[in-house]
View (tube, rainbow, N blue to C red):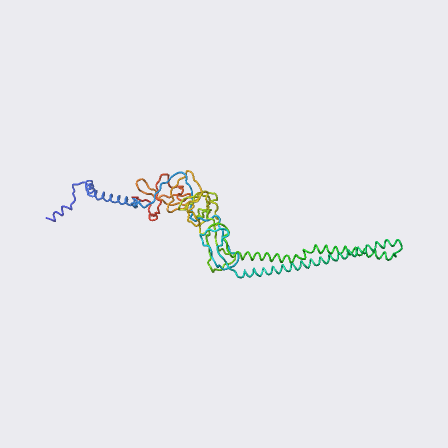
Length: 428
């Protein structure tokens, strides 16, 4: 019976036409084929769909809105208040510190003694120089006496020659009168006349010698006088150096520093104290060298002393950079805030430029002036799309936007390095 049934099943239905058989076979295969096609379509679609956007908690993120308007470019630096008038007091000679009379913070007047140095060798030099001066003065007095004696002797010679001349002239005149009466011979007359002429010439020579001696007297004493003046100057210098072992303030103000201790040895030129006038202060701030190129003398500035903000102007820009920063001096244009004192830490903000009608936003955590960076722009539905944003000029808190964003768009400024592989985020 089973064999009969099997044989019946495999026997084709000869009553069906070929077309009917194909239609019957298609009806049997239609559903599996449709299911297979749907599965293939779903696989292709799933491959083409973008992966799901990561979800990020928006609470700790830093957002800002792109604005259009005037951008005030400012440069910030940190530093301290320093006195405008500061005087370092150097040691004028070698010495050892034996006493420190005043300490930093003390109010001083110009003649107040800050510390005392000791130099036994200098004291001995003062004594030796004083003795040398006395010896030089003695030599000068002796030379002056010798010159005076010589002049007096010459004056005596002139007087004697003049007396002899007057006597000879009188004899010649008498012989001239007696010659006419025949009482004196011609020879006697000639002798008296010749002697008078000779003595007249001698008088002239002695007078000339006296004149030369008188005019040469200063020259004869010049060497000794120079020695005396040199020793006097040397004694004055040594005495002054000895007196300067008592180091004085030199100006009214506040003693700021005494960088030596009792017993320390200092050399000439070593700074042993610093005095400043605390009434007149300025701010010295260090600005990053990448931003200092826009800072110029005369620009407006503000100084934050933590106890108030004071207006000022840039008074000096150091031409050299040190450790990546440039020193900028800011002079106050008004009164300094209460509590301002030397060495007080301050922040200085310099206004370098005003940019009108530009796009700007707060400075992102990463991104320098002129750089192109990736930022996430947040849509109203909470999705954030990565954008390539080109930055322009930067300020302390804001930066110019040149391309990549529009006014009114909200962007994430936090450091998103953890999501650098993602182009879309879902902010919750």
